[in-house]
Amino acid sequence: MITRIVEWIGRLILGPIEELGRGVRILWGGLSNVFIRPFRLRLIIQQMEFIGIQSLPIIVLAGFFTGAVFALQSFRAFSLFGAESMVGGTVGVALTRELGPTLTGLLVAGRAGSAIAAEIGSMRVSEQIDALDAMATDPINYLIKPRLIAAMIVTPMLTAIFDLVGIVGAWAVCVKLLGQSEPAFMVRLLDWVDFDDFAGGIFKGLIFGTIIGTVACYKGFYTKGGARGVGQATTSSVVVASVLILTANYFIAWVLE
Amino acid sequence: MSQRSAPPDDPQAEAEDPVTGEPGAIVYSDVHKAFGDFKVLKGLDLIIPRGKITVIIGRSGTGKSVTMKHVMGLLRCDKGNIWVGKDELTSMGDRRLRKVRDRFGIVFQHAALFDSMNVFDNICFPLREHTRMSNREMKAKVTDLLGLVGLSGTETRMPSELSGGMKKRVGLARALARDPEFLLYDEPTTGLDPILSAAMDELIVTTHKAKPGLTSVIISHDIRAVMHIADKMVMLYEGVVYDEGTPEHFETSDDALIKQFIAGSLIGPMSV
Ligand SMILES: Nc1ncnc2c1ncn2[C@@H]1O[C@H](COP(=O)(O)OP(=O)(O)OP(=O)(O)O)[C@@H](O)[C@H]1O
Ligand SMILES: [Mg+2]
Image (cartoon, rainbow over all chains, first blue to last red; front, top):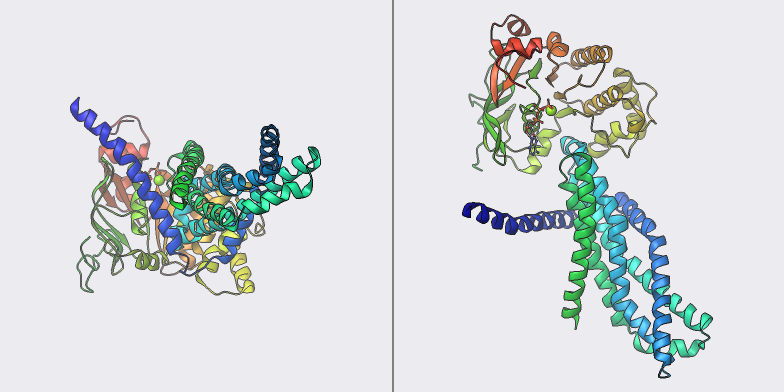
């Protein structure tokens, strides 16, 4: 009985540590391969296109409506004490600092991260990764590196797009729908949102992209047991990446303050 | 892991195969492998003779694929030594292992074609990765190889559009692309109908004869399908070599286990 409890506790502790070890191994493997031949530039660009293009529609859609609804709600609240002019700035700061990077990260994890995990996972269970190894091609260099690097480059870009489209959404609501004057909307926006906010958000995008790429690749790479295993890897890549993004977001905010 | 490498006059590397009298091209010595608590190989001693066709048989799950994956360093053994020619694998780092792998061609149990690429790109993959062949040379090579495996004209098909037997043949063409010294087949006939399976056997023999010096290893539980093309047969059972010899030796064996396996009978020492 006691040994069983000890075993159970041991597994509870060792499980996450093993997972962490694998994640670090994949992250390190991908990064340390950047300057190892072959460079795989074509594959990196292919993956950037895949992650970027695939996520773009949902990023634009989500960005626009996030900005729009945020503007709508805060316009109502601020108009209670005649502070409508603060809406543009408030939305701008919230978007560039928090909502842009976080929502972008979550959406990319759901859209592209899951696809990466599924693809690599099904390559694992159908022995395609063994085949790469057998043909003396390093799967880390061939599969992991391009996806990791692409996610790290594309997620900040998508974050920037989310920010911009979100501000456009807010502008559309305030200026076009609710009849606020253009200068009233713009003055606080330009005043409050400084470059540091924007850059901080982009930096978060980089971190989130790294999380998404690493988690998707390691979940896929260590997939076990047939189609079911691929499904599990896909789901848990989204869950783990999302949790890590939300947690990391808090700690980054804490460090940047 | 200890830094051992076979000196040129190492007795293991020079081991002679008792069945065919040929020198050992691949030698396993006391190889152990476990997955967690589950022991698969329990002291495997095995000699693959150079230039011959060796068939490894055994029940599903006895570790035939595991045995094969060791020889290319796709799996690392817990204990023991494996020699490929004069190279000892267990003491090698990844980089040197990749050099050794380059001398092998492998036809996977389920073909393992890259499903994002068409037949042409699949066969070209090892060429693009490791050679500087021009497109024209590659085209000629692929045409040759597809002709050899009897699939001329399928260059632009995707793996999902091929039958199981065709996939295996494309897998064979891909394995041959780099003119390997060793060719490993994992269950080449399993899942094929009897006629395709006979055609695959013939293809294995033709390929073996077409490439002088090639050492072929076939892993199968479909014993009757591969028996007549073997120079040497090895039976794995419970993680060790149970018996080895010529096909005739197996056919005339009085051993209850072997008899049961060859007959495919439910009655005998092996239970389901
Ligand atoms: N990567 C792995 N992790 C855990 N267990 C494994 C792994 N690879 C193989 N095994 C186990 O080792 C045993 C031998 O597997 P192997 O694939 O070598 O069997 P096999 O003899 O090739 O069978 P088959 O004829 O069905 O292909 C099986 O019980 C399998 O579950
Ligand atoms: Mg097998």
